[in-house]
Length: 600
Image 1 (cartoon, rainbow, N blue to C red):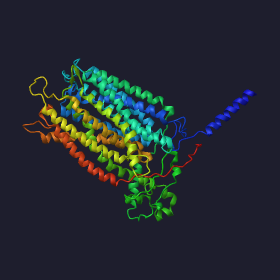
Image 2 (tube, rainbow, N blue to C red; image 1 turned 90 degrees about the vertical axis):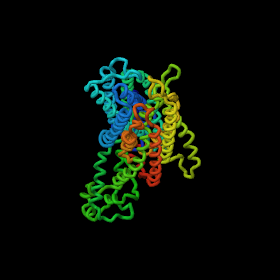
Image 3 (cartoon, rainbow, N blue to C red; image 1 turned 180 degrees about the horizontal axis):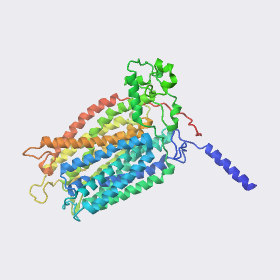
Image 4 (cartoon, rainbow, N blue to C red; image 1 turned 120 degrees about the horizontal axis):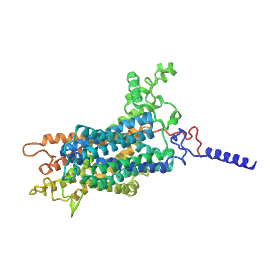
């Protein structure tokens, strides 16, 4: 009897404990679809697993990407301009695929499933590249280093190479925007402590990204520069596999948000409904527009968005006409005739984000030079210290160290200092838009410095050496300032972008918000490729083979850098106007008590 009483008492205690468990306020759920319990899910335990996963996946990606321009010239036989364009197109494709990943995540699969599937594709691509390099591409054995280019390749080997790198592009592209949003999902922004953790997460996320690339840029980059391409690619494949396993290990602890359905249909409904009512008079009071109770959205964590002025023609979609009043049930249930204010504001939000996003593309043009022209510039400089050769791609280590340093400086020094001098009651210093503007200014300085370094590299070019044509006596370490400035600009621009687009995107479009940041980089690569092509055509003549020829000593790469500085300056002026016009999204507060979950 005593044993039975003890068992009953324990069951009662467990039942009471479950009743008193505190659940999240943001509507997130666990893997079984039940309201997420704060102590047993999410927070920094899950976030750290995601940060490590991001670091390892980035190591794998940059193990291929950072030296791809050298692989294309030494192994695949492309010239400098063609290789730079190929890298820009490939990198651009990586981030275009981020839109596909974001769409599937927000609409159907959810962020967890999308991350797992695309990471698996990423691993397959890396294994395929490793096999094709070992068996077909790096032939004859020992080729692919600075002195020994490889021979020609069969159509099958070339096709396998391109299939492999574009599988990598698909896998990494679809995974990237979702892992950032999924990590942010592990923090309840409506909780005072976890809300601060969510703000910090994006800085640590970008830091993990850079620390992952540190290893690939130094250790893996060194072996690849020596011609050990297959070894470097196998190391990348192993890192990606470990990243996937770690991600799956955290499955029981993750918090999730239920997908909100196809956003394209929601946007189309707003446009169609507003066109149908183009003659309808819009009420002056936004409270007269149609909206559902916020509790109806609480099941998937979505919040109602408050009505804003601007794009008034879209408000017609939420006007309840006399016809809809007379046939209330039929018309209100037809979203192609009547949309909610939240649905209309989703469309307005995206329309407001697009000009900001467009202004970030030219920054990405500057950023992409680090993986292409910076490497080619470094290869044409003095790369030896005594008998030790410095791989040009490894100079991006200074970019990574700069990112790590400036994240600390910004979070611990600059942001609190600016907040102290601000007149508002906000505990934060720069807004996200202000940070992005600072990033643009630093990027302009980076291009001016890069152009100045190239000017002096040309001044000290080697002219009397038959075996070192296209080189200079200027040390590669003169590139350090331009890498450091690019790193500092990333902390302001890309971390600010991640926070801005994730915070300003509607609840059902968080992955799309992160994808906007990725596609900015994508279009930056395509614009860079187009710009290089245009510049080469215009600058080529009988006396000079263009600004960016195969032998940089015969060109004027410095003029290209100065051109980017001028274009980015013009972009900064436009950005100031657009940022001043932008209106921040305003959400309605969530219900304090979510159904099926008791809060302490």
